[in-house]
Length: 455
Image (cartoon, one colour):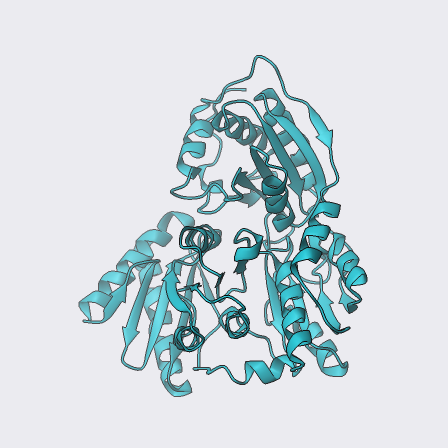
């Protein structure tokens, strides 16, 4: 193989590799990425290789394994596992690195790769992605004199034992789970059985076509789970995404809980006080709750690469995003959806309270879910710059930590380019529903006009 200019550069995204399989992400490109990653690892060492349930995962695994081995690395194949299990395995087994084949919550025709460092971080923008991209596109990888070998190893027993050692559930509970036909079907039922957790499950077959709905827990895809919660006497419902790094909770009243509310529930029941990391999308009410519970609030950019880095760098006790990625210090800061569910069960079993009772003590301002606007990858950065310039010219206080966040006297709006998709994302909050509608309409017009002028 040699460097080929026909390799598309847009698959190298802020947090991972991602594209439509066979069009953007081919077996040849996957092998080139694996070879390049092996070169970044000095063409030696053991690399963990796992994948989610997508149908293209099996072929990609062969190509990636071949690339790693030609690059001099030994491959430890752990099969189909949720993404956080691969993070765990790399750290627990002291591997040199890892690759998880996944496109997370994207549609079934997509696939991708998360390249994991020895510390459990992922190669991302500003942390190795630029170097990887350059090696791949210029064909500067090195073929090792001695190829590596591939072995198969069971990881789930170690992972399950570790998680069970981190939680104490004091009474039997009953929950409803939508597995989204994803990778959590491989492990969560086993954990639930060991802990005596009764599960009413939906979409529990690991089917890479995601026949029931797309593997992203949203208001639309969670409707069946909401009805299941309302019809049954359960503690809560939870929707897993396709690769198991995100859990969206539904309380016992059937309400879908945004991630900042869920983070607030955990903060109210922290045994250890300290720094709490939250993203720019989170409610202003969360900051006050963190302070009231003896912790220090720290705002961060949106996204795993940034939240995980801050949780670790600052020794934070917990972190979270409004999108329901939740980061726990006791599992090396990883965003692990299965662990998030177990910790929620632990809280309810210890307090004897309903989740809705805890949620109702957390202040709520009218806010939007994250709204998505299609925008070509090549202009989305320019679009956000135009919007930031206009907001600044209008005399508003703005924050450029991630995209642009503008503060009004009675609310805020955040507009940022998606790090994983050709999209612009917008969220907003205000003191009243009427004012929120005004801010949202204002933001929509800003985005539509900026996209039109940038094309």
